[in-house]
Image (tube, rainbow, N blue to C red):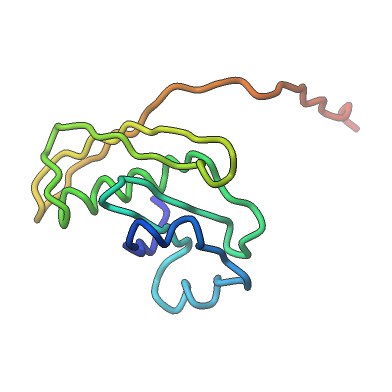
Length: 130
């Protein structure tokens, strides 16, 4: 999967958090592709693209990583799902259901799911063959 750097933060940090410069180099130096801020008390995350321009509202790949992190470090129980919040600060609050499996020493899988809403539709038209 994608390599996330998880940054645990206190609850009061999430509303003020921003990315003001591209962090790709910083992440690469630490073996990560993306960063996600995690408020463990509120079970809420924030995630942007690496230049901070676009904030995601429901990042399934980050939620999977958070599930493994919670099983290993935060006392989550194997097979017990929890709700992870995201998108509130972007005006589109979302909830992902995260269910880690395994032990803190050996995370075997993490299931991520949730409801979806159609916010648009379109069509892809391929050019005719040459």
